[in-house]
Length: 278
Ligand SMILES: [Zn+2]
Image 1 (cartoon, rainbow, N blue to C red):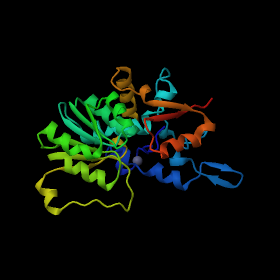
Image 2: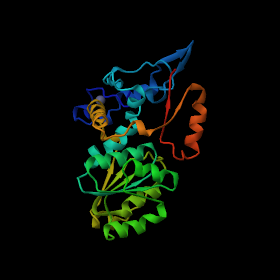
Image 3: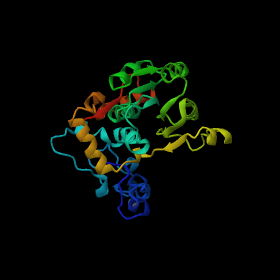
Image 4: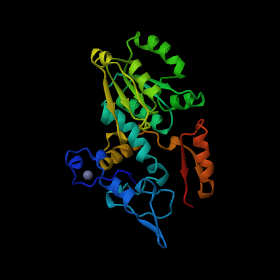
């Protein structure tokens, strides 16, 4: 299921930028699709995927082949599409490129997998949580460092030039700015992380033109959800995209709050927790 179902008729859909369609997104927060007696209820993000039964717009449901396990398919939207899509759609990374990725949660791991699929040859994962470094390398990172080690490894790997691509998968001013600082002149900074409306990032007027760097926002991996879900399943079948390895825990309804507590505590080496409906 997709939380950004394309309506097919608005200006964004007609331009082919389906990830920007706001028609169903707005209705998800204004038209209740559930009720208990007189009380109106809204499914979270227009879906409500903790529920056993859902009412959703038809374009929010993406059909997958029956042999794809639900647990595998469930990972694709939104985390994997957002991360792999940022690499293949938003940045259109070229083979042989160098890249640095700030943040190694589920979406960051998907960015790393996307970079490997795109043929990037240097992939530096950055995360303050040491437990995530081994995880990042398991999914294709060639190096994994803490934030205070980035400067050193940039000098070592790029002769101080900076990386071709810098992905922010945190959404904080400090990591977006670090992405800018560690991208090479002419390189790209891709903002994937969901930041706060009041969090401001500073750039000087001079550096914006002088360094010729591109700042690219990436909403939902610039995804065409039907096309790209099918592509993710082809990557998975070909052994290029490890979805099953991203499942760290399986929990049932009774464990939901415990599962959220794990995320609040920073996640450790947990990438994705799947809620089973048995
Ligand atoms: Zn639309």
